[in-house]
Length: 67
Image (cartoon, helix red, strand yellow):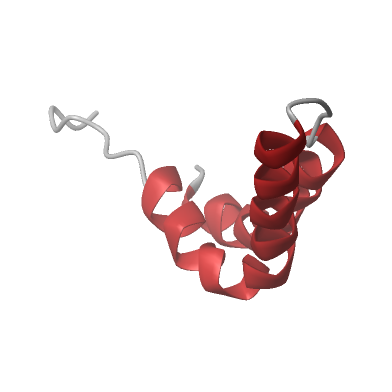
């Protein structure tokens, strides 16, 4: 076994996927702006759409690093 501390590659991979998910992120930001202006509402759907996009992009790359 190696004595080296394992490195978590997930944050870097997820960050690299953000440009591919720009459309869903922009929809989430637009929703946040509407909710702030109106004072009511929720952006849960848009937030989960963005996370789903990030997950879909990052999972294949993350799986390559698992032993």
